[in-house]
Length: 112
Image (cartoon, one colour):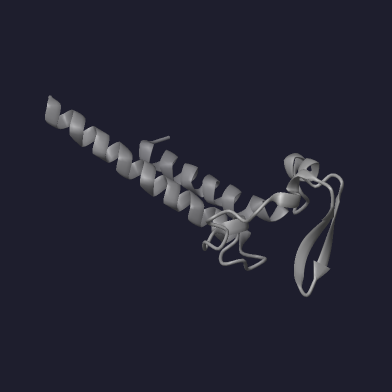
């Protein structure tokens, strides 16, 4: 397999995993979330979820970036945009990594 063909297959596999498999991810809380919610009950008051009871998460607050476009693995909070958010995340990370590697390669080339 040539280098170019490898990268094309690799990119397609990443897009398939990030864009397709993410729809099968569980929406249930993970172990950490479930543990911090132990002892509390989530109730809805005037359309806002609140915790009642006594648990670690009782005093939690939203993260500073909770209103960002890719918060909660979605795009602007749209429920079924998880796959697209995954693909966008992969593209951004790959772009940053590619740029960093190019910068490092150029710096090494100028030293020689």
